[in-house]
Each structure stands twice: as structure tokens, then as C-alpha cells.
Length: 351
Ligand SMILES: [Fe+2]
Image 1 (cartoon, rainbow, N blue to C red):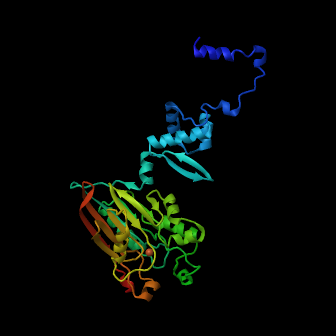
Image 2: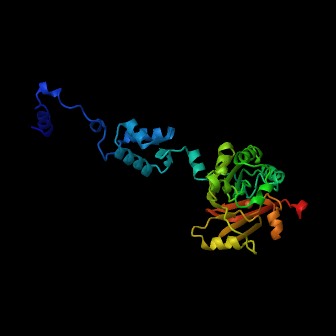
Image 3: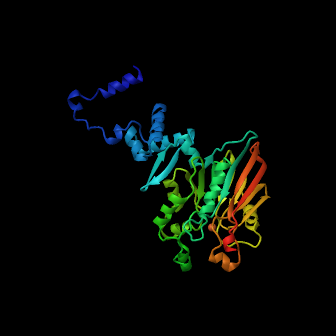
């Protein structure tokens, strides 16, 4: 007698009259796969399809496949192992999973592709500190800069923070007198309406300390919200992010603290300490411009689109109003040639 015949014989030992009295299967017994299992190959493909179409929690996955928590967890881990493009995030206290499309993934990873010319060179813009909503913002000049980008066929602008002036009334009352209007919503609406918009230009932004006055007060990330409102604007991160352009790693950084006498000092100091040096390091915050090649990195101070304000006037410093257009030639993943072009808007009215 084979093992299976023995088994079936054992099962059939229960008299027919008593079979109806056998307890109904419990919820656990109904599960397709017992604790600690994993979905089979075909169900894993179904799970992949599900996560490509919507976000799902462990509970959603358990319900869809009639499996227990441990099996859902193992199956999600299996997908992660075989296809790294699985994102997870918390929503209302629960972890949920989804698989972004290639296009969404590139955005999530801050990856961008820009066109190259016949010689293999490509361009992008670097700017910072637009301080929208300040009485000293230079929005006309900012629009002029984007007109130049458009004319020069530049498709990508990287903004290193202080998109907005923000409100710091709690500790700097005088700043309240330097604002065009008051309130988070007014700032957001103003930015969504007045930040330059060009059909084919994508702007990628991080937040700066001025944007984060709102964050410090009540946890509102105004730059992320601006990106939610505008198709042409992407949010890359909170005060620092690596953005990949045609394979080059560009670090956008909005540090804090006061400036130094030598305008390249902060670049050098940060690069000295940096373990994972990027190809290009772009620093906002200090409202001055500089370019240097240091420690194998092309480093930029990004200037501003805010004119001379009372604070700078008081300490005797003048802003460098303008921004960079950078053209590079990359060979074997490294920058072979670089041409940084500063576009200048001298704030002559106030000097
Ligand atoms: Fe700034």
C-alpha cells in the first residue's frame, strides 16, 4: 500500500454519519498557504501586477491572496529581492507597498535625462535663493533667466533651496515688514502662479532654511507642496539631495549658518569632510557666486534672485544676483570638459 493510500484510508476512518459534525475549518485552515510560506511564481506575478496598479498594505495583500501575514511579508520580500523597484511608505500608520513605473521611478530616484548636442555635450542650469514673496525678490530677472534657458535649449534647472522667503516672525519680527504678503497659503499660491514656467523645462528643487521656516513652525513642506501643484516642478529633498543627470551625480545642498570671508571656504570645508564626493556640488544659501574644481569635484556657489535686503546692507555684503548655465562633456562617466556660464543681473538700483 502506498503512503497516499494509507493516508486516504486513515481519513476515511471517520464514519460518514459523524463527518458532518466535524468542526468547520478555521480561518487559519482556509488560508492558501500556511504560516511562513511564500506565494507561488504565478501568484507572485499577480502580486507584482497588483502593486503596479495601486498601493497595498500587508492586510490588502493577505485579503487578496487569502494568505497570512508572514506569507505576505515573505512574498513582498521576494519581490524586493528579484525586482528592486519596490517602494514602501507609511500611510495612516500602516506600511504600504507599490511598484512605480519606470518614469515614476526615475523621478523618485531624482534621475533625469537631458538632450546632448552633436558633440555629446549637454547643459543644465544651477540656481538658488529665489526668495519669492520677499519685497526684495527679483522675479522679473528670474523670468528673464528662464527665457535665456529656453533660448539656449536648456531643459533642466536645479534649484538649491530658499524658493520662498518664508515667515520668521517668531524670532525676527523685522522680517515681517519685508514680506509682500502674510501666510503659508498666500506664499504657496504666489509661488505656484509666479515661478517661471516653460513648456519644456523641468525644475528640480530642494528646500532651504527660509522655506523651512514653515516646517519649523508646523511641519509644512512648502516646496514639496509647490511640486504637487506644478507638473514642471519636482521635489528632490529636504535641504540636500543628489540628482542624477545623464549619469552625473549632482549634489544640491542648502546648508545653514553665516558665510565666510573667502567665498569658496564653505565649499572646501564641506568637500574636505565629504565621504561620497559627487561629480558636481552645488551650494545655495550664501547669495554669492563661485566656481572651483576641488577634490575631484566641480563645486559651485549659486548666487540668488534676491536683491540687497536690509540684513545684507547692515552687514555690508552685496548679493550676486544671477545663476549658472553649465555645459559638460562626459567621457566614461567622468566630466572631461566643463563650461560654467554665469548669467549676471547686477542689482544696480540698490548698490
Ligand atoms: Fe537664501
